[in-house]
Image (cartoon, rainbow, N blue to C red):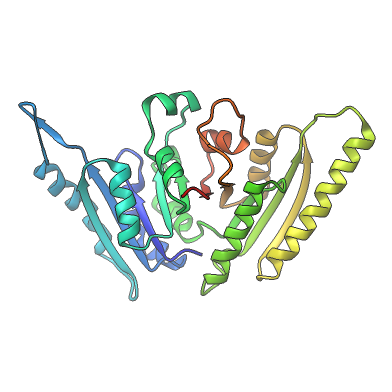
Length: 292
């Protein structure tokens, strides 16, 4: 589904392990893989300087990525020094990146606003999709497990859908990337609409469920026209709980989310299921943002 990826690692997120799985990543359609690590500016007697020793060590640590590169695949190693978000944005432009791999810890939204987050800054400053992977999972996979994960990152996506602007943006982006793929790397989607328990009126609740099923059927037709196998399900209850339960039940590869231009994902006053999923999901999250 994607061809040019940027894998950002600070060596605490586990993503540096992916240097050993370049052939597996390539089997999922990637033709250019860029590994990026940012070394903090060193302070020497109140004078800022680039730590050349740490840069050299990081390059050596990532060097395994170029040890086994399949034909037709371009692998780059970028070790830089400066502000991480700025260096990532520069790499996106330089290498025409169409998906960014990042690791993120489980933090509250308040913590993200206070201490800052490279992933959060990227969500605000680029429309390039982010593949958010939990360090706790990547670091505990066996080599066999991680090999399979790399091969099937986008094989089966769970798509929470409620016909909002963000949901429509997500569908349009998926259609865009599916049309570009040379092989059916995205094989299957699970569309899930969760109707919240907000009305005691049985007639109103039934109408909402039926309307959700009708709209999901329309989206299903759009995606099936592109050769994707699509399943749909309407659930009732708490959106976060039901979406995570569906992810477990249907054995999906990742959860896909979207954010349109009308919303600010760091706005504390407006609850968002997308924000909660980004913070709490143990599943990989493929996030499309319309920022910029």
